[in-house]
Length: 161
Length: 161
DNA sequence: TATTGTTATACTCTATAACTATA
DNA sequence: TATAGTTATAGAGTATAACAATA
Figure 1 (cartoon, helix red, strand yellow):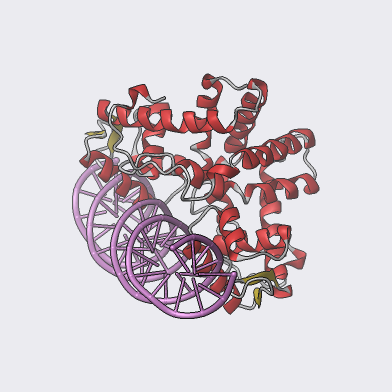
Figure 2 (cartoon, rainbow over the protein chains, first blue to last red):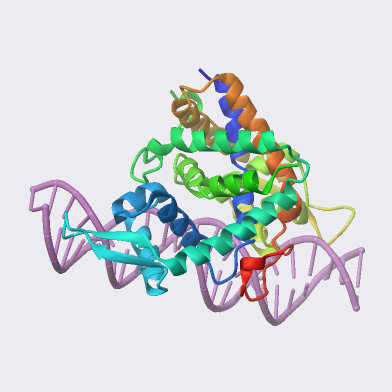
């Protein structure tokens, strides 16, 4: 089990994630908003799904996911067919045009990354990829925006836990 | 040197960073906006600096950094003293009250992380921390928002590069 | 009655452009 | 003339709350 000390260091390092993510968002074409690309990537990877599942994977409020999907569907990048099991839901699916947009975005990101990581060994890149995947998995339970809300007044946190 | 294939995998994994970051932002007290905590963490780690340096480290436009700093100073979390070397600049510094706020936020994040990473070994946590630090360093040149802009029309990207 | 998804509204973060004070 | 920083404005992303349709 990881010590508090190591977790604290990791937490500090994670605070730079914002800047890293921004750097990648900037490599995307200006007509492909980062949020749209994220949704397309999820649909490509996991296949057809309902909005509720997408909401979980994005880690956002359902209203946000709904908005993104409406935009994607309006562009013809995704489709929404009725869910035969539940008439309240629709099944979301990436369309060929969406796959094309996703492919272009992925190419740009990969090129930018390969350029920045010239000094990295293949082994280290693979290691980081695997650790990030594992981190993502470990954090999945914290990803729904309604879980673990901090609503209490933040007084006297010197004795947290 | 890392292959395109491994970089492509890493790029795909990095797309989940948004959800990871959101999960951590949710652990913060509601009166401590994530952006403010990020600025405090940078000032704590790197010490006194000018706005231009903070702008680089945040990876945002100067106007954004200026705004954050104004908010922090209004709360008494940071101070701004005249730069003796250049009367156009001020030197930014974290104040005791800001350190206290940062400490509380860090505690929460660390606790949340330690809770999620119960199954991780100390070694793997340290490894991930080091690789993330190295990634952050490798990407530093891409972090200024004016560098590497993609302004050309994204036509025919099948032949990128 | 509970759940799935949508819409209206407001808040945070961000970038662009125009500006000032100083170098 | 160029640079450091600020402010006004606009746009993207997000959450809350109220709602409609279905389970």
